[in-house]
Image (cartoon, rainbow, N blue to C red; front, side):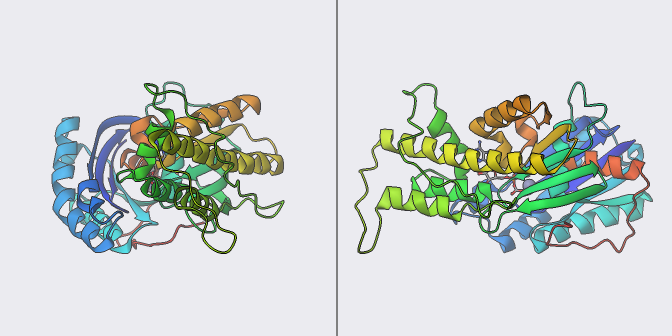
Length: 349
Ligand code: KG4
Ligand code: ZN
């Protein structure tokens, strides 16, 4: 089965062609980072207009890369939730038009679930019995924990109650004066091997726990703590900040990463205690490209005897291969959508 995947939920216009669920024949992503840089974040109205311009050239590039034509496709999968409504509509309308005109099956895929599937793509030896599994999505828009019994049976165990982890990374990076998009730049600053090792205990940033049994996340306190560390604590009991030298900025970045990763692993520990028989940890989303988080997830999985399924770097951030891959999996189990498929801004769980 050769599935065309279409992704347009935020600021990446992407098309991919995936064979047999995991073999990538083509994956093309047109990022809008340059367009939104001046605003320091994604402007929804600009994003949807840009998808209109980019999606068809990206589709043609994907077919060329794969050396295929429309006649070779078996089905169309599209990320139809969650995301920016204007952006989603462009992908969903394109997918429906293609499915109708080519007379192909159509399936709508949850973008957040697809991030969990991304680690299976191009993996040399996929786990034979992966379920029951835990899922962790950490991206610019989402931070959620899932329990999975199959790719059709996902239960959300917890999610962020304020900022997503990637959003906190991006804002912390802005506070440190790093360019947009901040997450990867903060990561580079904290772990640049050409510089002396940063002190990740320079500042004891808060690690949010919430209630003792909570599987939700909170990163707004961490972000505010970074603001105070850089600009000083305001108010009657305030104190001035240390000068933001390059070495201090590196230490702050490393301390931020330590607290952020600790908060994630803490919730994974709690989730594992509550979910018996877990074999696999599926992790995905832009922040799984983070060097420290990857290392900590690897250690956590080894310590708890889990198989870690995490995407290669290029499939951590938004892409259409994960949409086509999960789409193929759903289609293989008889899931189909009609041409009334809607674009939905919220996640399904
Ligand atoms: O999955 P994604 O492309 O978009 C959403 O679905 O939200 O994730 C983008 C997010 C951004 O916040 C970006 O800063 C973050 O992932 N990110 C990183 C790294 N690479 C991307 N955050 C920390 N360290 C990185 N290396
Ligand atoms: Zn995403």
